[in-house]
Length: 302
Image (cartoon, rainbow, N blue to C red):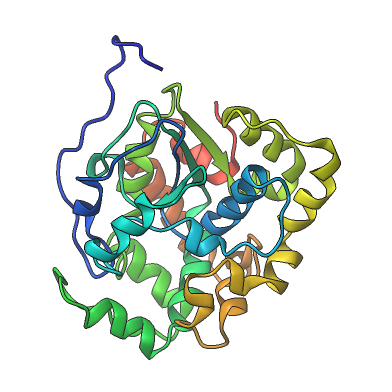
């Protein structure tokens, strides 16, 4: 991966919001074996963190994955608290980001896994995430020092209205999915980037985990394979959600099990009209490069 002919991505700007402080990456000291997990949001991030933890730690139980795999660009905790803790980690690091590539410091030596999911499924999961957020969540995002831009408010009561607002205002009240997906799509052919789709994980988790292990140069211990699969299952993660969710789920009503909600696709099909659904598909075709919208909807890389 030291090919000097490759035009490696360069950071071109900062992104600040009620969630983001992209300057967190500016002084980040990469290690050559770092793993960066990237998604828009609600696309399988926690699932991928669990999968990678199981591969690195050979099927161990009882690991506090959310603490071990920090979200670097989240504004909280502040940089002077977060970055020394990440630097002190002595295991192979697997770090989470929700930034577009253009706002991220990119290392040619690290491995990057990008997870995609149909935006309608993302939205339904995002609505659950936002609706279940408690006052501690709002306080952490809105009252902590360093906020740039507007505070985040309560969600609309109707998920369908929430869906239209999200589309009409380009990801409001969070951030643009189109920009996020598009930026990663541009670099999908780099040798240290792997694309994974939520639907493919659902339909063939063992096969996808084997591909992920190969990409990360991790040899799977056959004697631990069944344990790894069990620990990456939705039922196991739901039962042990407090280990996988930030602060054990303290930011959501109902705790960690609310954060890991249903893990299913297609809930929108019974609630959106054909016209509502077509609105998303038309926007995806307009906003995303050729082939990207198809991958996002199906998991098929053409």
